[in-house]
Amino acid sequence: MATNILKVENLKVAYGGIQAVKGINLEVNEGELVTLIGANGAGKTTTLKAITGTLPQCKVEGEMHYLGEHTKGMTSFNLVKQKLAMVPEGRGVFTRMSIQENLLMGAYTRDDKAGIAADIDKWFGVFPRLKERAAQMAGTLSGGEQQMLAMARALMSHPKLLLLDEPSMGLSPIMVEKIFEVIRSVSAQGITILLVEQNAKLALEAAHRAYVMDSGLVTMSGNARDMLDDPKVKAAYLGE
Image 1 (cartoon, helix red, strand yellow):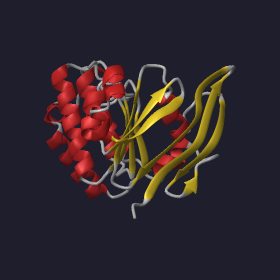
Image 2 (cartoon, rainbow, N blue to C red):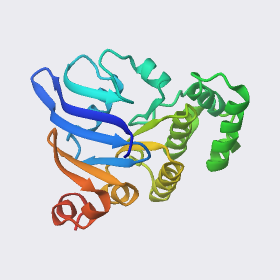
Image 3 (cartoon, rainbow, N blue to C red):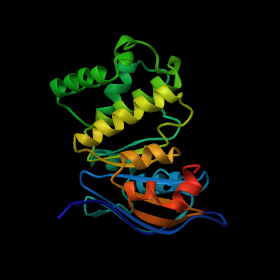
Image 4 (cartoon, helix red, strand yellow):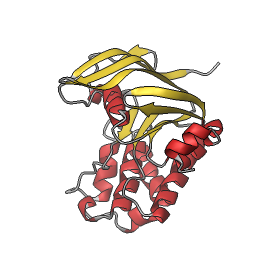
């Protein structure tokens, strides 16, 4: 039986009088790549921020368990120490630090110097562009290069759960393909992933299971490949 990594039950999030998330349930099991798709404004990013404790002042209700522990009152810093990492929408790299320094920041909860150095070499192998520019300030990189760096930085923490928020947003088609190649590779290594993504086709092709969000509600869930052939999903999200 699969080990449950994340379980969200009846999550509700309200900003003032606006109910952004209206009581959703989702779960992610060890080794899975689960995707959350939906139109802009559906509540996907708010859901990820609720999971990571990074929402601004708002009302959050419901139950969230990570590695079997209730996350209520747990700070985002403590969640990182518990091996939960997130690549936020917009990438969020440290622009005035070098690529090398950004990667070291990703490993700040670790103290195995040899292992950290080996991991930097590993991700430089996956993203040779980053290696070429190791001493360059992150703020001078292109959007695609910053996305590579944000993913590598998150992976430096050896996450048990990796949250990805719109990793393809604003990137060229070639760069989108590269990013998804890495996502599939990371998943194949057994790292558990929850992916929020606007490119529904690529997300469903990469994922094991999927949830569809619409106006703050989960309207569908199931096998990701099956959803690729679902007429409602095709019409709403795949342009078919």
